[in-house]
Length: 499
Ligand SMILES: [Zn+2]
Image 1: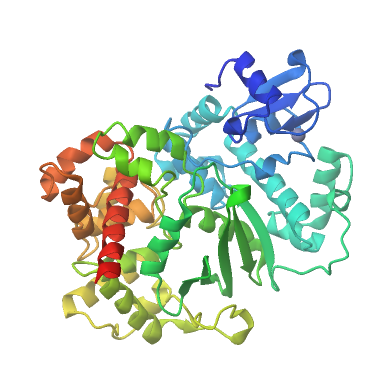
Image 2: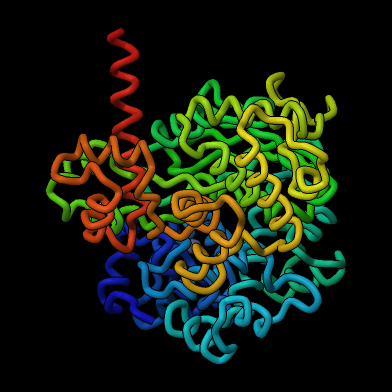
């Protein structure tokens, strides 16, 4: 895999350069430990250092994670500098648990990506320096370590949450790796031991810059009444996974380049999935410096990028929920789509009990695909054809749990979504961008994008014109779209203030 020269990596280590955090890890031969480049410990001798591009590669080489700099807290990048789409998709699927549990093999993972198993292994070795299995194992170990350090969850819950089916296996793994039991890693605390059911808080680090205000503004404008609420600089929502219901709250810790994530959820085994969803919704893994630099090559877009450094492209919390919102948003304003979503939730969403209400405005969970598919009629103030589309979407999602997962190429994903009755090019591109995280998807016919394009100048006020213009923004057209939307939202705010 491509790493900077050893001398450059070592200089980064000597100066504890935060720009390299998350991009390189150093294994120290004399101690058997691997570190982030910002580790406060004394810098090892040059000849003892081996550099890796991922924690998994260091793990696979036999190193154990440092207890001081805590590699599990390094900002994790979802895409490796745009090197390989298959690797990015595979990583998203592994984060979703594709290699956790019986029958979840590398073979099956490769098949879902439409490539051979050997090719997948080769790509992983080339881009990450580690096998897919090592990546999944490292994730589990590091997630457990994160929970041990930052929460007071009982060890049995930590073991379960990290995907270990027995406490004994978990303890053995820890003894092997750290030569001590997991409890020894925990700081002494007088705090009682809250469980995931009563609420735990974790920090999720990103690589700066991060335009938090724009992210929160985007989510606030689209917050579904009853399900999501944004106030006091915090995003909150209800969560349903399997048969369990809980809530999540996300705030910003600017001075720590982190999101502060508070989760209340009765099923600890869902914790990794919830953290993965937070990362996706808040676009935590974006290699934003590279993306901003790329978009700045467009002289007209460059001032906008400079105005909003670190602007992220929000993902969808749940594929089906996002797709429903896309249909509700067909040919109407953001405000109208939000009202429609509120009606749909009030009629079809499940009411949440008092136990998990962390905010009085959170009253329902978003209706699951099965629930809408089996409803006699869908109660929402829209024409019959649009309601038929919702029904078709719910049936398709209920029949295929992988409908909103990345699979094959972006063109294949768009084509697959377009087979659903009433899902046209705009809707499919929007779903691909926000739910499938195809960051080059681009809903060119979007009213907001066309308005933004008009503000940008040039001959781009038609979808065809905009598509031609957008060629320059590949492979990150989705981020350019976000800049256009943000500019329109900014102008709307100014208009509102001056009225
Ligand atoms: Zn360290």
